Image 1 (cartoon, helix red, strand yellow):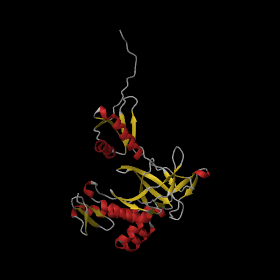
Image 2 (cartoon, helix red, strand yellow):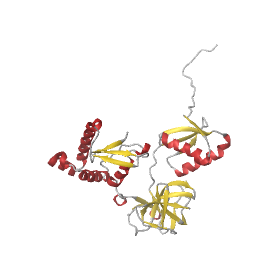
Image 3 (cartoon, rainbow, N blue to C red):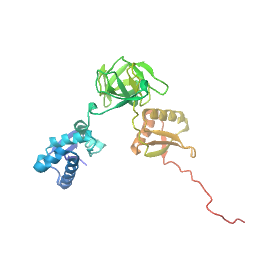
Image 4 (cartoon, rainbow, N blue to C red):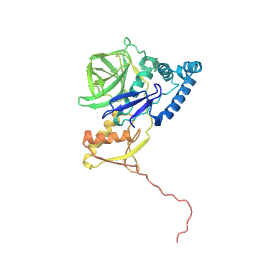
Length: 324
């Protein structure tokens, strides 16, 4: 496809260029999808009116003409923050069709950090729940939610829930083996694959740290605190593949790489089937697992063979038989 129809603005958006980098809007909707667009717009307004009184009143008082884009956007945002309405965007990652509209939707409809209540567990007071304040003047609490192996070592993505974070600041890092205090060597703000060094960031921001070895889900806080953020929900895997190195000489690199991938990504599972003795990788879907297979070849020069997991068939007695 070449674009999408914006049902709020009721206009077409064409993603042009080699990578869909140029978005062109047109007030005219193509004839072959106009009827479907009008039908889906009416369905959207109906569902929105069910959960938002302002939209319902505007529609009853002035009809379709009273439903301006500004009114609809404000209503969608209110209901999204209240979790009573979920906006859905259409598009394709291939050549970035519709990706810009999704990013605009993040800005238009999703809550800012101050509109979401986050809770930490106070380890000094029997794990009592403490509501985080999105205030840079409070004592620092943050969570490492993503890891990445970069050319300068481990790159740790951190969300600042409370307080501010400064280069050279002392932090308490929680863990299974107990907490320890570290000095933060470097903070960067990520822009896709580019990074910008910063000296300080405030509450609600997402940054990356260098020189800090920790697993995903580690809580960092001010040395005077001992907080643990509630665990991020990790969904169960939906797909599994058998995997093995193409050459037995790559066994050590293969094991090291899979261990690293699991360290970075809690949604990736690796296990050895006790009956078939196959190595199985499980994740969120075919694309998720395919990316790690490609990374094995690209980053570790380890070619792999993948396939469906084998089934260990069993035989059992089902009845009596005569034997001579």
